[in-house]
Amino acid sequence: MKIFIKYTLYISIVLAVNIKSSFSQSSEGSYLIDVTGLAKMYEDAGEYQRLIDVYTQFINIDPNNADGYYNRGTAKSEKLKDYLGAIEDFNKAIHLNPNDAEAYNSRGLAQHNLDNNNEAMKDYNKSIELNPKYWLAYNNRGTLKAEFGDSRGALIDFNKSIENNPKYALAYYNRGQLKYKLNDNSGAIGDWSKTIEIDPFFEYAYYDRGTVKMEISDYKGALSDFTKAIEINSTFISAYFNRGVAKLSLNDPKGSIEDFNRTLLINPKHENAYYKRGNAKIILNDYKGALSDYNKVIILNPSDAGAYHNRGIAKYYLNNINEACLDWSKAGELGNQESYENIRDYCK
Image (cartoon, rainbow, N blue to C red; front, side):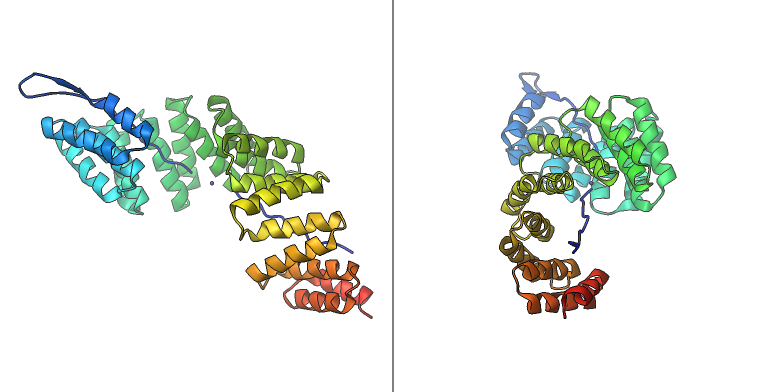
């Protein structure tokens, strides 16, 4: 009698912006404000409104300095997700310095985050026109092209980003994402491996590489990658879940249950974790535990054919034959053809 196995994995393109160093002198020349030092202090402390206040103070002292508006806009965009406020500041920065490629890139990023994609594309194009070697703008334009479905254009932009900055981990990561979507698994793994070489703490590169390794049945390699992602981020729920799937594929149901337990501790409504944990419990002959997990799945998703099918198996081994047959009948109605085979073989 077969357990119905669902193979569900979770796989993430990332945008980029710069901060400029800034100092300001009063109009009388009497003192110097280390804006960069203060800003770093507040940023490290997570006091983002104070971070913005530092740049506002800088602007009040030196209202014609484009960098103040640029940095305040960046703080609004990156720390407070105030994209409209950021755009206002980037507009002012561009007005004061129309040749600032970074300001166009950052305004484009804010527009991008507001789904103003045509405006974002114009800004990325302008940024690259002003600085044809600006790797951040190529990366961001590449992400936008990928969203538009222009895979060829996106690949060209990610290549240009890497060409202009071979140590830029994010462009390798995003190019790996694109290659994965184009079914180039080996190319994706190569790019994520390069991402990790440059930035060993890039958790999503480990995670995504592990996901592809799962798809090509390299379960040990996947297990190693998911473990590394979890070491970097102990609340990475999808990494726990996928590591549990990898352990199940490596015939370690007890280990998989530990990971599914951790997944459910973080998200008690994770349907697939209940489902997979139920599968592991069936393997361990814990039919009551499996029954409880499949009940949870069905509460969360009453149309899950696999859960009805597998709950029927748990009930069968608990000698609840009539209810097992009812579950298989329901699973069959929902499209699970294996359930009809069980009805034929076990429901007399």
